[in-house]
Figure 1 (tube, chains in turn brown, red):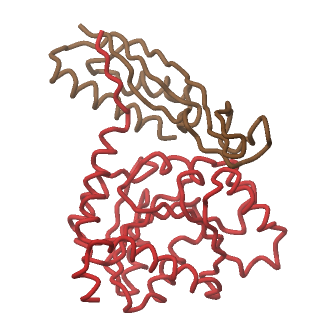
Figure 2 (cartoon, each protein chain N blue to C red):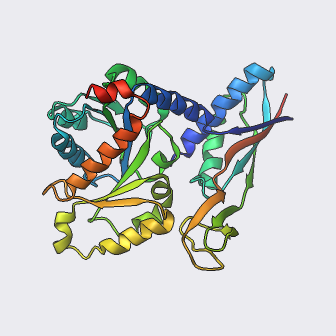
Length: 113
Length: 226
């Protein structure tokens, strides 16, 4: 359960950006979260509202873009989709996979006043 | 609308980079020890420091939600230790570790063990600036643990399978546990140890010394002075 800490990191970035880019209210926060990032989306949504209370982003809309996980399969020599970390390659069954996407945990954009 | 494309943990990662630079400048090998509560991390660390003896300077950062009991156990070995209480937090972050390093000022060319909070979930996401994460899995846990907590085993370079002295009394299938860890992370190294009997400790100490030799690359003066 480190979603609270993640929400606090988001708030820290919002405050830094507010000072840098001269805004006082955040209306919408768009995140990009990968299925392998270790983030529980429901817990993140819950934590977001709690952490943003009494801040410049109180009541802000949280939009989450959930990305797809992918890996490079060494025996196949190609990119394959992945649901979870320990899944075998859907083509050859190998576990010799290098995760190439799905660990994202990014703030993509903000709507501010 | 502001386009940001900023990593949510960028602040932590910034502190982690500062820590990593400090360790590199001082030839310090930093190891982040992660596990569930009760895997025997602190006992293993005590035994490790005893076995290293005078060969290397050992320093320890202990992370726990509460109490300084673990740091006291470490100090009994003679190694300097500092306790971080995370309070409500479930993991150490790079900022806490940076402060602890300032207070502890670990010896140049030595080993810094960072014993993370007993938790196989959250510490996986927080880089502390360490050279390696070392996961400790005890044989009294399930062999499916690497599959249940894949992020931690994916982030670790080495697994120590601890409490092997208990194997005769358990149904734990050690080879299945290792196979599961390799499903998540095909490159992970595995060593079987018992902090109680000392079994496998030699290989673990050899691994530490090899990793420390890597940390010393480019520090000819430190190497010559050991």
